[in-house]
Amino acid sequence: MKITLFGTQPYDRESFDRIRDAYGFDVTYHRSHLNAGNVALAEGADVVCIFVNDTADAATVARLSQLGVRLIALRCAGFNNVDLLSAAQHGIPVVRVPAYSPHAVAEHAVALMLSLNRKIHRAYWRTRDGNFSLHGLLGFDLYGKTAGIVGTGRIARELIRILRGFGMEVIAYDLCPDEAYAAAAGIAYVPLDELYARADIVLLHCPLTDRTRYMIGPEAIGRMKPGVMLINTGRGQLIHTGALIDGLKQKKIGAAGLDVYEEEAAYFYEDTSDRIMSDDVLARLLSFNNVIVTSHQGFFTREAVDNIARTTMQNIKDFSECRRLENEVRAEPEKTMN
Image (cartoon, rainbow, N blue to C red; front, top):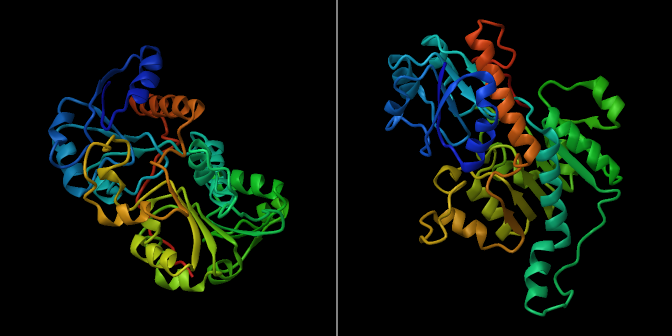
């Protein structure tokens, strides 16, 4: 079984090289991200393995089929970068890694929340310059505050466990509310508008679909509490960045922690420090001292990276041995958000 990895970082190669011999697969690594322009690099591969910034749109999937690719293996949980309908039409199954480490992403969301609240990022730079003033560093107690979680999958449930440990009230919204889980976890499902109105901190943990794309726009922000904190470790296009910037300028949004950005593909996972930033929207976002942007690193722990490699290889092994694909994703009709 020949596998071609796109968007390969050094840590990807290390984690896959550690286990490749145990599976007996022939693995080729490419640094570039998969797209319609470089899809020819997949020639001769049975499987292409891609990450969040690779693009498997309809045109790319069609070309992969022509090249003889038989499986698309995502080494991430999200699958919004794959045209699932096109993959199904060409008979190419798509598998993913649904739970490489819910703890990692949940803990990163909390790290962003704590850093913004207690101004850790600002205090770090101040004290290095000999400035030990507390002016502008005032935070608030998390105890007794309300966290609003959008989406209650595995990562969100780990996050809820942590937030409840802080003594926070947790309310949640999900298209498919699990009332048994809510009762056990001590949370309440509420309509989305009520979540926006009540939450001191809004945290996004839902998948990116046509229904959720830009769900945080001018209308949603307008319904939120003045000074609300917004945390997004999900997908960049859940938030309309222009609306976010307006909310920050108007002080409607008190702080924002973003591990994702809607146009992140051109920057995230790359060192662009020696170049002038051409993305004016990202540049404006980075100019706010109450915004922290990290480069989609929420997953990035030793445990998660190893789990990604192992689960990806097992998905491919299951395919090669004609077993049931436990982690297959397929195109399905979307439900309406309200």
